[in-house]
Image 1 (cartoon, rainbow, N blue to C red):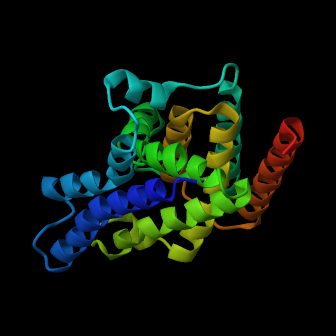
Image 2: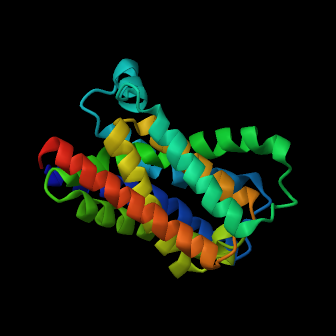
Length: 246
């Protein structure tokens, strides 16, 4: 593992994001900036691009071709893994909720998906699953690397709970972190199977879409679905190890 690469990635990511988001927390708590203002959206958005910027900085080559290859390359005939995990995600959230968000009509979902994939979450995957996860896997086992990446990823989000007007203020951080760690395993497995950063971006965006389109309810169906998905992910990992002889 290239320790310097991991430390540099984390340092750049947290520096960009936490300066923006902790700064936004101060501005909103002192009523200098309001969530309805454009400056709020701009600072929030820039902060969310911390992992994206850090990943590009760490690429051996930052030519347009190298960046595009990094994002869009993938193993052949692996698109079905993305579809499978999206189907599981939609099924788990949809069946456990059975109630859509009245503020989000179905016909805007394609636009929301594009937004969450490229601007509102999916863009982070260039760093978390594109840089950090693969680098950690050169030293640690897949589960340990995924847990480390997931924990750092959840820590990275912390300032949002202090930003007045951020959606996270209405969420329980512990439940959010647990779900985020489960999501880390799904995303890590998608990348492991497909070697596609873009597929991770799309799945992350789809996940954010599902959490917005449905009214999330913590019940036995949600817990059962998440546990089943983790078992399935563990099975894929064991199968991968057996096939590669690791």
